[in-house]
Image (cartoon, rainbow, N blue to C red):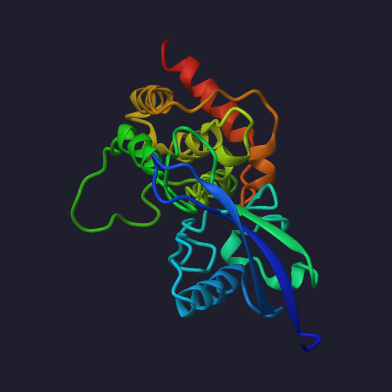
Amino acid sequence: MSKETIRLKLKVWRQEGPKVKGELKNYEVEISTHASFLEMLDVLNEDLIHKGERPVEFEHDCREGICGSCSLVVNGMAHGPQANTAVCQLHMRHFKDGETITIEPWRASAFPIVKDLVVDRSAFDRIISAGGFISVNTGSATDANSILIGKDLADHAFDYATCIGCGACVAACPNASASLFTGAKISQLALLPQGDPERKRRVQSMVNQMDVEGFGDCSNHGECEAVCPKGISISAIAMMRREYVKSYF
């Protein structure tokens, strides 16, 4: 084994379906330190298929830290030990030869397990749908300078808009709260004039839908901000609460 290759012991959550009891199963894999975490799982699955065993189900798409589908808890941390990094951008050089890695799905009643490491995050889609649309005219694009927005304000809104909806905030929160996700989606529009006409209805509908989906409430632990791969601030939650209170006046 070369210096650029490590051997790892894996404890992977296996569960045939949402109504079947799951368990952690042990595996071993030899992998290059240049590989990503998902590439390591690919290598594991190739080995399982070669042995005639069922591969591990896990979600992925862009593998560039953009789509947010790579939802894994690695050694008890959503998206793993590296800050501001989605698990698809986590590389094996951050682990040591002989280390044991525990890999689990998001844990939240609002994110039911589908199979193995895959969970159903459609609750986020329903929260977004509850927010509705903004009142803008369709047709040709408007002139870029027709609505003047200061750079500081635009940058602030963009910081919230970087949320990729991965659900790490829910997985890390002891209350399984979706407040950071919902707050970011509400705040990005509340800061801009384009989002003003539906401002009151939007925050009421999205917060109410968040409660309907069974997410817990925020108690300011701050774990959501700590694991967010985009580093979104919990100030989004404070803004969401202000917007919600103001919407009734």
